[in-house]
Image: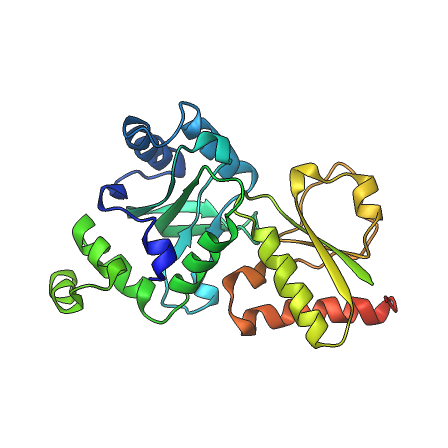
Length: 168
Length: 101
């Protein structure tokens, strides 16, 4: 994964969630982020509202049928207290609406939640995430990972062999 | 100078990505284009009136009618040339149809 974005990913910010709806997942992850002091009190409400007004689902089947779809939830800088990308693996496919066609439902398996308290430098984060997920096999291999550690190593491209053994 | 208004609902400056991509590609195709990136919530009728083409990520529900041509630019976000091409082609089609300069 591109160095710039990878620096924003932390092992403690990789979650595996059981929630069946986006609201459940936001509530669960949001609580954890609040506890870590990384977001404000209204972060959860705001991210739920933002997702409903301006959905962030990305239909990866448009790139390759085999790819699972993802979403890039985020909200305004004022609700974030850090600059990080939170990775969430969804055990159950969760419904998100398509950013490009908001009436369309997508079943999403992976979230890249963008936390950014810096009003200025957002552009790079999204672009780097898109470059990563659209590069051959990155996403396919990522969703096969089972644990937080696996996911972290896969993103770091470290120890590819041991990750493959664990993931397959 | 062809003036294009790029817009997103997001907070990740996807509109900036659209702006940069369209400016670069249209310049390559020989057109003088200037694009501005805004968030949908900041758009009003007066603002739209100042531009020639509106390129939102997806067609937004606005409280007024948009009277300039709209080209949905979402596919540019994938950063894959084959997905962006149709958007650029559509923008070029609009430029030619309305003889924009």
